[in-house]
Length: 578
Ligand code: PEP
Ligand code: MG
Image 1 (tube, rainbow, N blue to C red):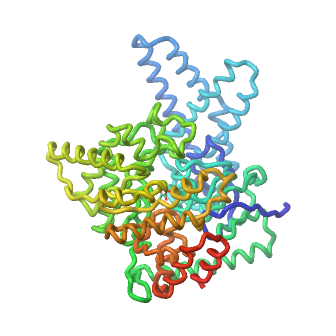
Image 2: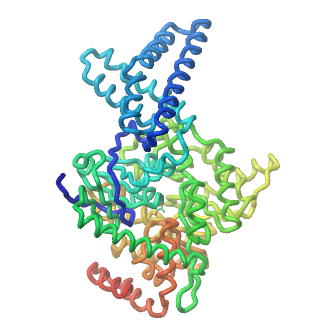
Image 3: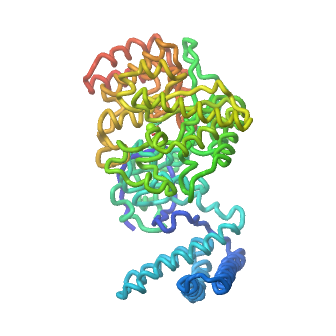
């Protein structure tokens, strides 16, 4: 097999070596793992049980329909499902795949489904072709049963060596992978600060995006090396390349172990300035990693991830449980819950018309705009967050603010949510701090009104860069233009930090810039004392803080602030990091 390299954008550092698993959408939700030879019969039995359960389910539904006055079509529809399920292609095929490929039942079933769906696609008769949807529905029913009856514990071990290869993944797709342990992943599309990349980083595995045709060129089960640090994927490496990468992988492991020892050390510069290093999380499941990283708190809980990958919206109770779990888990350390930032690339199925694709989603009804347009949804979330304030040190953060009117309206909503909790007699912290994100240039330029009304600020550099440079952060065609060091971006960040420091209003950076070690000294020099980043980046940034001397940095950063020359900026940054 010929060896070749693919270039893309490394969005999550590190090296992974493993076998390719090509991802198509229908199989996204299904884990793939090896079944030991001795457990194959049990796996087939698990599959047979699931089929039996669904047949029974369909039969009882049929009886209900026959007894009642339901339209005849429903009965016919159940009959079709019953027939599909009894067809040997669906009930025999997967058994064979389980035995031959020694894989789990869910995987075998979706493989077989893909074959069937392809056959249906080729049928001339439009009516029969439509039955494809029934096949998918039947398979989904069986999958649900299987997932309620998981396979043997530990069987997922082989995922450690599996590398996912997809054309594109949405943030919602990627968040599902949190439950599995893949070694790395590769996509054809994507940009550095797309939400997909951010979630990929949170999986803490190497990832290379924007390979353009990787999904087409890589074959199932091929050996791959993913080097997220150097933006490269090696397909079918030869022995010497493989040996070299294994060596590098070992060195990186040692480096990580060394950094881990800094876990309990306070983040302080050489000249004695304390710096806050907080974590960004997406779900309560991220807590163990956050605690392990030594982060001093949570600077950004992207609560909208509670709304993805589900039918319907989470209730107040469900949200409250998630927020309380995080608040309690952090044991009194600050937990900054961002109210949900849906819209743009994070769409929620249950939001009906409002979640429709806007002509220009990033400039559309997103984040706080969406919340203010949907007051009931917003109030539900605010009540849930307020209730969690009773169980820890919780703060509220509002995303995508552009104008004072939005702050005023949000504060009124918070007051309303408090009032309804008071009426219910539910405890909450009346003094909860409310902060705002500086993500739109307008907010950075008119920051004084934000400072007057909010308790703290957090700069979302991912969006600030997107909106300053007019570059869609999720579009890989323009990702090469995405530049945190653009003089205009630096000016806006510098301006926001200085104004907040002068007004004694705490300000943090919670965009990806905060976790980039090469930018740590620049941000420190601009006066930043609070950083929030993916937990895996905390140790590296801490090490950089520990070796930084503010008086020494100051002069270089002042020169960086004064120049609009990109080449000079790079040279000065190199000097800063020397
Ligand atoms: C940002 O925009 O920098 C940010 C932290 O928010 P998100 O990446 O979730 O949009
Ligand atoms: Mg943002």
